[in-house]
Length: 364
Ligand SMILES: [Zn+2]
Image (cartoon, rainbow, N blue to C red; front, side):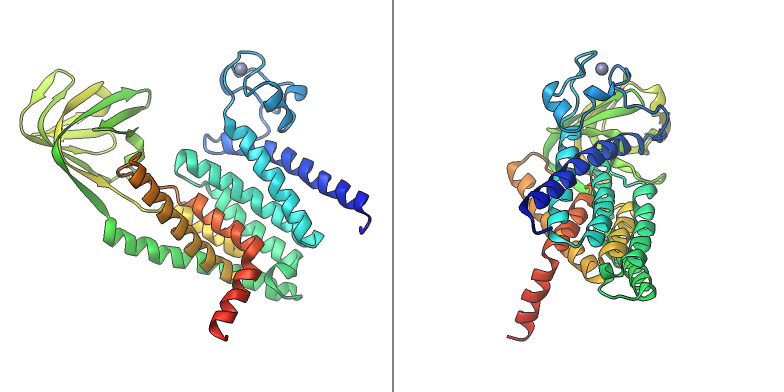
């Protein structure tokens, strides 16, 4: 192993393996939220023309560059995400291989695979499926029993218990934050400086909802059945019916105006001028609780606390920047999973360093 040639070969193997696993994770990211089976159809297909992709056009990293991010059959753009996921997985696999003993490295390979799937699904859909979160908890406990060094012990029993307790801690601590957040920001009231035009336009099963410069999907605002969105309007037109001064009371699938309930299925276009908007708001989804539990099952209780703090810290910075840049004045839903994943990966590589630094702070 001290031979530089072997070291290079093993490193190259870890990188290529990571790229190949990343290619598989892309399939999970694409299919799990829409609930297609991973194995049926067996081969990958183009998301646009549904044409199966032959293996020689489906090489991780290489094919995307070679085909310049386009489908060889229909020329549709293939999202940069596919390349990014393969590259991130490859780099993380290599870095983990270089830093950790091989048993630990294999467990961490499994761990970052879950993190990557959760992160990219959360970015796109604002949810983290149970397969990722609960699957991650189970995988974490199993890995800890198999490789007790993950939990800093050599007893399998102790490692399994520690993994379970850390998972429970992750779930409970984030639930407390979530409940506290609901009290603080259960709803968000936005009063506009001046009357602001808005439009609601049906698009497929969803709708585009634009208020001033802020555009989003209708479904972004609604997490639960009973969520309500209130829009106080100076004037509004629902399809061809005009109303004067009215408050529109929206649920996901219907709107109440002056006591009339209108199903949004029957509406194609709503536009008007609004003075005030009240949006339902959930700072975090339930998926985040289970996601942090999975982080605990793999990395232990310290990592739970660290990931939560690092994730919130990065989240506030990003929130502040987008606020300053003015790209998003307010947002209905914030994916929190990616920030937790960032905190977890930081801990994975630099946790020892932080612990040491923290130790010297306490006892100089
Ligand atoms: Zn195609």
